[in-house]
Image 1: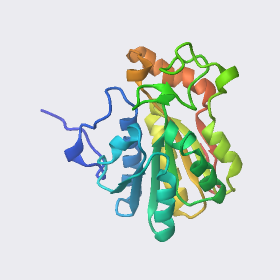
Image 2: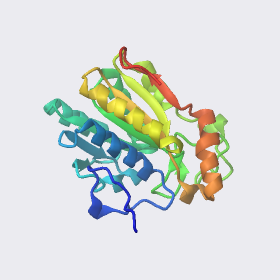
Image 3: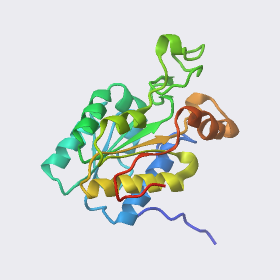
Length: 250
């Protein structure tokens, strides 16, 4: 007997398997998001925006209203849609570059204004789609295509602490967390709470997800999981950084 995997109802079955590289963490993040949307029963209200980069491969992932934006502009597009129709549940999905480099101004400004959207940023410590160049999240000493001898903090700075920054500049109604694909159940909880916070109209919601890129890391299975479970959390602490009053933290 063949047992078919259970897919979230908001997934599009005709576009599976997905187009991400083998071992990529995007599929796990998107599965967690899909399950959160299902459990909240908000499929007909969600508008999903995806950035350029590896995240653009999510454009046909869901059976949701979806828009693919210019690089770094996913947050303002979702912000505009949300302001035009406050009844929508707006999700801006991006990678390291879309949120912390070319799109950093929009992340900072939208967080400071308290836009009632949910921003999700996938952190795999490098630019995946363009070949593995150094990103704002690249770890000290990490080798990439543009840091072949390892990232030097003295000349290129230290990894961007996105959730920590957002937690600092947002008002009390914001929800901010960092999850990991090593613990998809916890990540789904964070994503679900971020969506709930938006639906309650409290304030900004931001979740960073520590993810995998064995293709550009050039790691085997054991090395890949060690990277996301042990190495990355040394710099990027997993957990909830800001929780609105009455919501309850983990």
